[in-house]
Length: 210
Length: 71
Image 1 (cartoon, chains in turn yellow, red):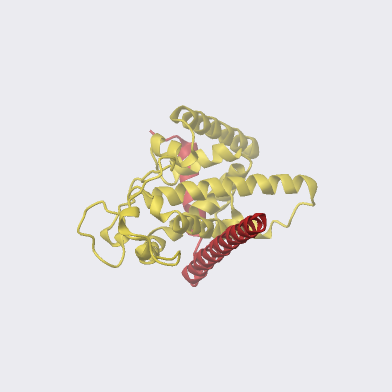
Image 2 (cartoon, each protein chain N blue to C red):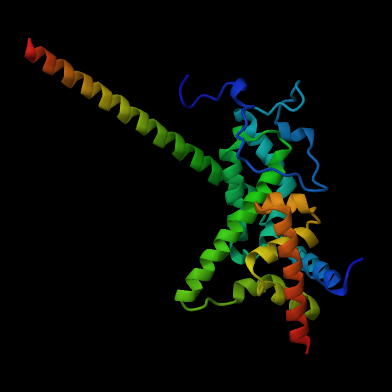
């Protein structure tokens, strides 16, 4: 068996204990995620050679939502790149997933992490280079009402972690445990980021309105 | 009970999210990316295996030639 041959089925279910998983409220796993052929064993991961079909289904189910999540988290023009990277990572680590249901949570966590890293890198670059045009970031907000634009503008001023906590809490409606899994922090830290973020948002909005 | 700020935040986030639309060819682009990376990974792995086999073979031939000279 060469390296180009598909992996044996017994290796498909091997789990890596360090992976972070979570299933968002409202994201239900469908039998189609298992791939083109139906599995006779419930919970059995599809074989590696079926991952292309499974990924196509996952793409249809999650891509638009993940793209919106990346934009809300501040990825701006890099949002499509972030989500594409998340799917590539899932493709690479497909055999390490514990269950097919974990794919949605894994994608969400990856998008959150990649977006945070990209934002931080961009912030460092902006300190040393001239600020870029705001055209790209204004593309999405131009269709909003004035009061919505004020909130979005205030959200951009928040620290990355607080913004993440607010978006996951108030847009995805995730529970604290799910937010903690997506952000890779404790539930207590999630509460702290959420309350501080909301307090900072209130201050910015009141400051802008006065 | 939601405060005014929470309601405004939800409304703004929903409004901003609704302006985002995926490109029509998004799947093709993403699929091409992961397939290219998989191909590159396999090519690199093959090259490493071939190099290791070649190195071990050369080391063995060298050891044999040294042993032959010692007789």
